[in-house]
Length: 344
Ligand SMILES: O=C(O)CCC(=O)C(=O)O
Image (cartoon, rainbow, N blue to C red; front, side, top):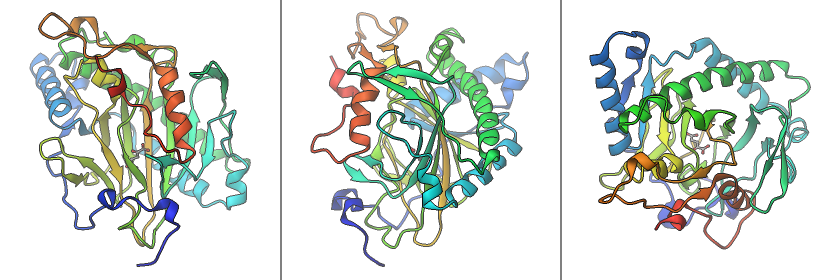
């Protein structure tokens, strides 16, 4: 296998093993009970499956989720066409210091460059978001001129993702013993965003990662992956990296830092990373479900009491993201901010 630019090379302890363990155990949860309004027994068994998956894995897959296959095929095909454009065309819609939405191929995770290219999109109206240092960043989508189908596919898909996000948020609330709509207010005026990831073939997949090990800072993520595979999850019971086997048309859901804090550690955000392939490209499409950046994140009142006091101080989500963003685009010598910094 060939060599690669040292900027991409992981420290030896983080290099992926190519003899893969497949995580057959990652729960696959059927959401069809949500379609029958009057079957309480089925709903409560679904809620306990969700609770067990959140507690034991922090990851699960959902089937019969209600997202039309057509929308998924449309966005995947448009993504492939976008990434097939020349570098020059893609650079015309590059993100920059002012607007973090658009194309880029230099993201770093844990200060090592990721083997990937990315296109980020927001579904809020053109807006400004306050960063930690009270700078104003403009969030504005950029669309390649000659690929109108990309915009249509992304807009339709994002609508479906928001519907699915509410279903999942309600199930998670119920699984924590909360009223069904307890968390819904956090998605009003939400700052969720959609990412198109392409992991090109790589001559040295044993040295690099498509995305380095990380936990998601958001509430949860809804991920579509193609049939190539590469997503690995750090299994809670033994710390082994295990591959999430692609399940056609399923979505992979992972709990992020915000749910860990809201739930006061009842659920945990789990580390994951992406391996790349020597001869195949891989496409994945995460939808990051975010509350507005103005939200203060802290354990929910209902989940704290005397024997279980709050384990985190409140933090401002926009400031947290702004601190993270500084390390996403350049190699720094310090670890990026984590929720552990707010532990009481
Ligand atoms: O591509 C994947 O499977 C996961 C992507 C991911 O973790 C990310 O974009 O943060």
